[in-house]
Image 1 (tube, rainbow, N blue to C red):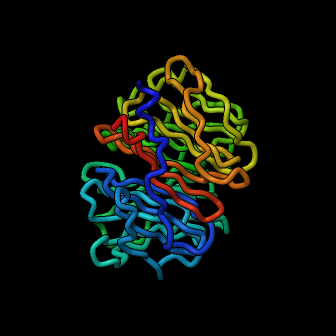
Image 2 (image 1 turned 120 degrees about the horizontal axis):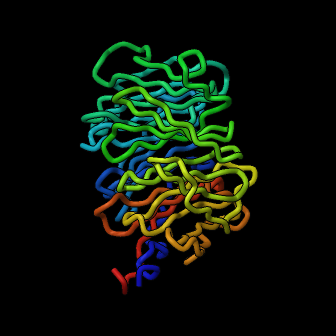
Length: 320
């Protein structure tokens, strides 16, 4: 019954917003909306359940948009991209209310996440081996905190991904150097877990007890947040050359990962068994990004791929 309630029904195609690859998809906190990020330097807001395009935001990023994060109140969206810029947008007006710069080099910013009490902070992760914190309430364009080797957080390579726990107090950062780092914003402490392969994705469980880490060796590792001990390894997807993502289901009962061959794979959290394999996109394309509806919402998933497609998935109608 639990496997039958997984979001494997293709409910909507999110089409008509982007020209080219869709690089990321992110749900709003109530799962009613989602944001897609494109190689075409635009991002789009959708009514996920209806598949309706609400607005396309252009004119901010000079290169591809790689990630987005929706505020809890739904009023703001943070984005980042290949131009090194990190933006905060007003959803209603479509205006950028903050533009932060500071990531160095040519690689740009890979991930962003609103965090802290009231989403007052915005974190961004870059090719420059740093995570930066920005104050959403201040008008200045400089980071309020920079975490890199010179400040005691020794990222050894590009930081690919971010996850914020349910309280907004801890940030997990995945890095090409083969480590996942958890930073406590309250005391500044950083805990390092090595998984031995470049990390492309990190995600906290809803109960804040676990962290999953997606690696380029086609595996997802389950780590205990308290001890850092590896508790399980999940295999069955393809993640060897491209960035793919992993997520917990809304109940934390399943681990989900995208694959380089168009699939999305679901595992039972406890047994590690593959319970479903979904051909979400064409076999020739990488599923660049997935997101799962938050805790408390009906089972739903959004996916997007390098071939320019994006889709919204629900549980099969007879099981909803």
